[in-house]
Structures are given as structure tokens and as C-alpha cells.
Amino acid sequence: MKDRKNKNILTALLVSLLLILSIGNRVIADSGFDTSYDSGSSSSYDSGWSSSSSSSYDYDDDYHYSGSGGGSGSIGTLILVIIIIIVIVAISNSSGGNNGGSSGITPTDDGDDNASNVTAELSGVTIKKIKKLIPDFDLDTFKLQAFGIYKNLQKAWMDFDTDTIRDIVTDEMFNMYSMQLDTLRAKKQQNIMSSIKLHKFVITDIKEENNMVSITTNMSISMYDYIVNKETKQVLRGSSSTKVNNYYEMTFVRDKESGEKVEKCPSCGAPVNMNASGKCPYCGTTIVVKAKDFVLSKKENIRQS
Image (cartoon, rainbow, N blue to C red; front, top):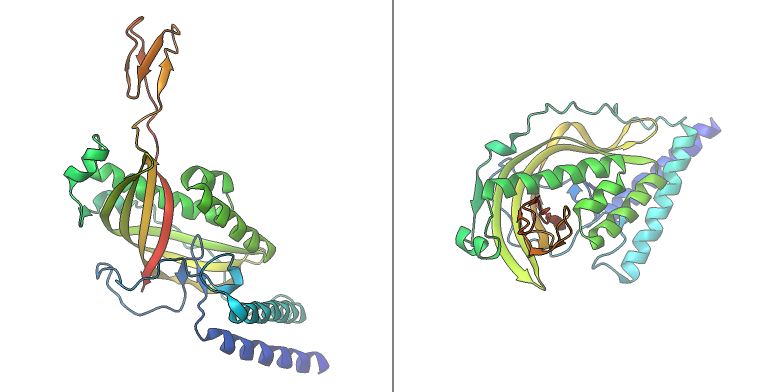
């Protein structure tokens, strides 16, 4: 009886604190905690992107390492979050770890990579402008490469695979993701994402700065996205049976040069000077120059439905 009474008190305290935090705060996931589980209700994949979007990532305070928030409000929220974590642990222990969540069975990805069937579009930029900076640019090839980076990032995030993340994002983003994954590990939680589908792909800008080329894109993507207890696999937040539709702005960067500069022939050692694949003028060996790869430098969830 006493245990039940304590549990009821703890539950009431938890509900009260959650109501306090619910004002102006959202529960979010996705790599970088970009997805909100209580967003708007639009059902269209192609209805565009909000013009009033924030210029910075919007994280749940439970995972917040950086951003525009601050002052006494953030400190107060942090204290409340710590209390909530303590209460959750207490309730979990008193109930034998059964939090009443649904089964954490991961939806089976149907394996249909539909990106090749999505028509890549341009908005506010021309293919001529792009080819001034990237002469061999191909729109469909870049679409598949960019979406491939996104999917690889989501899988690496889900698997806590920091080695893969390091290869496909900038150093700044890698450091951010590493800290956030440490938080998930400490909480014994895992972000499950599957059946990732591309519905719209638009290139909106291309720039050159400091010998780097950046391409900004808008992508409409749907997927299953939820948080589970890493040990019990029970769903803690989100839904394993309902997809979310996210509208992203993502920026990809690479060195302006199309490939690594080769100064010596790998076969005869003769001095050469080339940035593109070709033949050594001395021995005729074909030299294959590895192209510079794009990496993700920004991923912002503009809108969710």
C-alpha cells in the first residue's frame, strides 16, 4: 500500500512538471534532435517550407548543449529536467521497469530507395550558375549523393556510429552529434528511424567562399522516428507505427577543386600537376584522381507534419 501511495505521488509530481515544461518546449528526436513529436497537422508532402523558420536548431532542453536559449529561464528548465529524470528513474524502479509504453519493435524498412524516382528541382538558382563553380555537376547525381548522406547520417546516429558520422559531416556538426549521442548513451536510450523516403528535392542556392563551395537544398522526407529504451526496447517517445514528415533545409560543402591534386605519378614517380584524372606524360599510366566529396554542414528542420 505504501509503495502504491509513493508511486501515485511520484506520478502526480511527474505530470505536474511535464505540464510546466510543455509550455514552449517540445520533445524532439532525429539526428541532432530535429524532429518534434507534437508538431502541426499538415498532411501534404509538397506544400512548401515555412518562411518564418528559425535560423538555429531547436532542441529539447533535455538534450540541449548549445543554442540561443539562456538566462534564468534556461537554468530553471534545466533544474526541472533533472528533477523529471530523477522522478522517471524512481517510478521505473518502483514498477519493475515497465513504463507502459508500446513494444519497441522496429518497423521493417521496405528497401525501396525511391530517391531515383524523385525529380530534382531548382529554385532561385540556375544550372548554369552551378556549373560555373562545378563544371561537371549533374543534378540527379547530386540529389542521390545528398540524400544518401542524409540516410547514412540517420543510420549512423541510430547505431551510435561516430566513425561514419565523422566522414559525412563537418567538424562542428560532428562535435555536436558526439555530445548528443553521449547523452543518449547515458540515458540508455536509442533513436530508431526507418523507412526513410524522399518526396521532394530542391536546390535553392550555391555559393563560393574561402575556396569552398556550398549547396543549399530543401528536402521533404518521411520516416518512422521514435525513442526507445535501449535495453527493454519499449517506446518512450514518438510512435513506431506512424510516420512523420519533415521539411529540411540542408547545406552541403566541399573544396572548390574537383579532386585531390596529384604531384607525382604513382607508377614512375615523375612530377605531374593535375587535379583531374588523366595520363602521366612520361610513362602513360592512367592516374585516377579521387573526387572531393560533399559533407553536410547544416541540417535544420523547417517544418514537420
